[in-house]
Length: 362
Image (cartoon, rainbow, N blue to C red; front, top):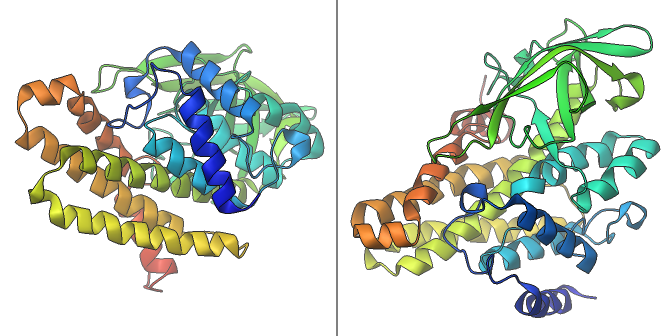
């Protein structure tokens, strides 16, 4: 099936299979608008059964073994339809844990975890950031001590989405003193003793984020993803994938939202969106050639997150209260504040682009 056939078939499937209570929510792009997690889980299972999740994954793990361009098409079409795709309840498993396991995990880990991520049988959370190690991820202090048959983990993680619901955490912890070489990636069972989850109440009124405390948590050695001391390499795989997919989501959410406003004062911002979409189309050419999207994913995420904020800020500042409240623009505006932080702050991404693309000194 070529790209246009895939896109056409997907559009028809969306038209015939979209739940009425999920379809057409074009203003918001994350869980701030979706309170019924069971419905989201059922929707993810439906996508999986239809073959629209794990599009690039090998077939033996539940995927379709198609080129990355097909996954990008799926993101576009689901977001245009105002439907959640690769985000919300299952997003950490799909965008964070799965890329790490696919590229660095062993065969047993792939068979055990990947199909259950796709089907939403297992929910995952992310254990990267800490109170003193957010943007500076290599400064994590959570320690995993080698005890022979297992690692003993002690520390604290923060901003862990869905940790209160999660079966597993993908955890970055310190196993040595070297800044980068002393980090290791683990899979942690969230239902075992020694784990305490505390909600963080957000400006939107929800509490999808959490603080996770780990006290003498035993992690079997077979739960190391990759090799001991190579956690930084695994983390970079995760972040590159996360930034690119977040960028796609925010680009097309911005485009849909600005089309809804139909405000002539937004012409300059529309030009920005068109320019960013042209950049995105260039990345699709790389994907068609089988090339990786590296720093360009950071550029896409950086620009898209800032455009998204501007769209919401304009709506809340220039439209009447009835419009803002009836279509929940205020929730979108509040939620968008975190998009220049998640996946790497705008400041960190500008540093990364300056060093890797422009070759500026650190």
